[in-house]
Length: 313
Image 1 (cartoon, rainbow, N blue to C red):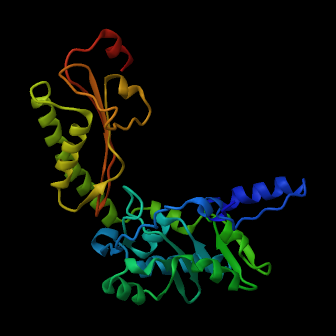
Image 2: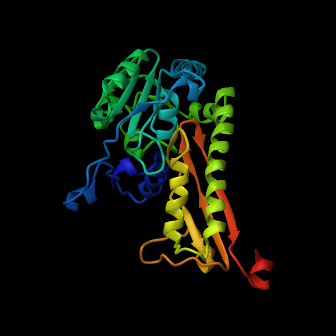
Image 3: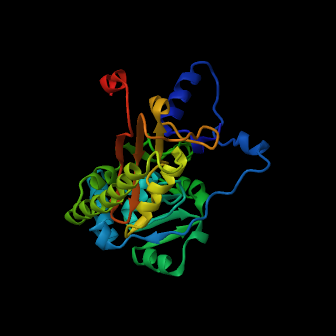
């Protein structure tokens, strides 16, 4: 199997279970890639810098804090592959995953260096200068599989639950592995005052968009043609009017009547239905802003409903 898409812990579990049956694992085989003729390339969305007025803490201080934790664990190398941790640590953002402002990358932090493995076409001069100022050395995305084996007689800190099996297996036998939760995971959970204030501002902006949308919906339902998809589009249009809006935080769930009973229903061109002035409409939606992320769920009573609907709601 392709060890790049299997987690380190799962790979080790397979390894332990199969070893008893004298079965070997080959984890560098991209079997799908051998037959996928029209496989699309990886995204190449531009990387941008999240300013300190949004992050609240310079990347240089975050990196220093991380190295302090590494020193406590006597680790000379930290391998970080979870995308949300990488962008938080470096205060950068991108658009490589739908609805999530992350950047396809790997990161290795040592006592004196930072190695970023990334598609370098995504970096403009401003971002390159910024990263150089943090002491970041750039490598091509897949070079991590050549660099990781070069660490000898080191203590390497990583989280096997988040690092893929291929990276784990490429570590030299002389390496001591400290398997622990990424320090960035707990660090980013503790919001600084700037982040907290930005979240307040973001929810006000998003609230304005939601209230304007609610007014439009209640005023016009049953009077103009509406469908699940056109309602979703109108809500997104209201969000786009707000300052610092980046995009949706997930695909909007707009589900009318019995569609709302489906878990995480996504309206498609085939399933899209007309919405009229009766029954219930569920909308679960959110936005990405420079200052934070929102997720809002509301059920609207658009007109007459049955006693059974009222009871179970």
